[in-house]
Structures are given as structure tokens and as C-alpha cells.
Length: 107
Image (tube, rainbow, N blue to C red; front, top):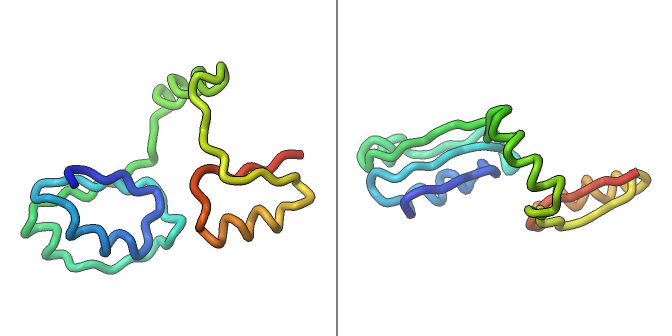
């Protein structure tokens, strides 16, 4: 792989490093799978890999994405939707980590 955008972190960081080609980049923008990781530092410098941290967007980027979301041009993938009274079920679904997409909670 030439580049990876990782919003999960956790043990996948070490597991997928060997799949990156020499000179590749990996951007970390989240740690839902775990904030503390271990990996062999030699993999970074011997293969000239770039590990980049990102908060995902600037205010300008967010503004440019908000308009298409409001108009329905871009629709996020919804993995599950729960009412506020079902908050514990939403948290459990999130904790299982088997979902793809966003889990929403509505009043």
C-alpha cells in the first residue's frame, strides 16, 4: 500500500505496517481501537515510512464538507440508529467494534 488513513489505531497499527511499501505514509486520526500501541521502530526507518498524526480537518475543511452534508449530496454510512432512551445499547454496539459507519443517537 502507498498510503493508509487510520481512524482506529490499536493493534492494527503494528499489524499493517509490513503491508506498506517503502516510502509509504500512514495518517493516524483516531484511537478508538486503542491509544497505546507497540511496534518495531526499525520498520519505520529501514523502510522510510512516514507516520503522521492528524486531527482530520481545519475549520475551513469542515465548512467545505458541512454544506454537501446539509444538502444531502454526501450521505454518511449509518451502521445503527438508537433513541436516546437506548443509549446503553448504542454504547454496546460501539464497544463491540463490528460496525461499519456511524452509530447515531436521536432524541
